[in-house]
Image (cartoon, rainbow, N blue to C red; front, side):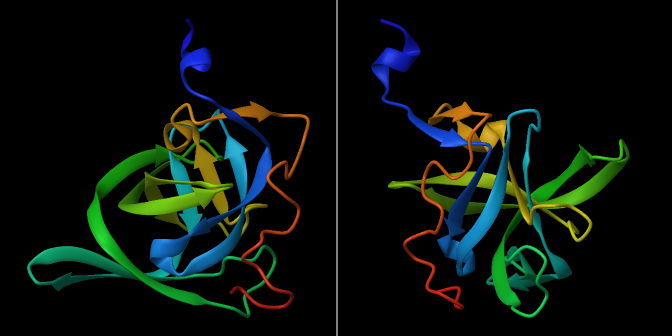
Length: 158
């Protein structure tokens, strides 16, 4: 029996709506990128602080593409920093957090780097480590999990 026969895998497209419930983000359009090792989220005003002796980060996210009107303030435990080669080929040192991602009926933890993605087409990139053999990706299709996420009401992020 092969690994794909042992574990049911769902098919998703090269871009999908997903949620980051721990961060208060109910809908973000993500590029599914198997060429990228790590996952990245557009974040700014990143501020380190301590809570009960733990290293934390406070930051703001604009989850909707081409929109800066709705900012979501989030906090997460800071698990470290990582050198990541950006799309321009330059190495950036980025803060890393752990958070829950939800897609279709599945939820799982991923490492997520925080960076400025203002110039990029997607506010989030879900890399191959974040996919963890949970899905098969059809690179010719989009939004196989649904065009409009069930948790996104018209005009709202909730």
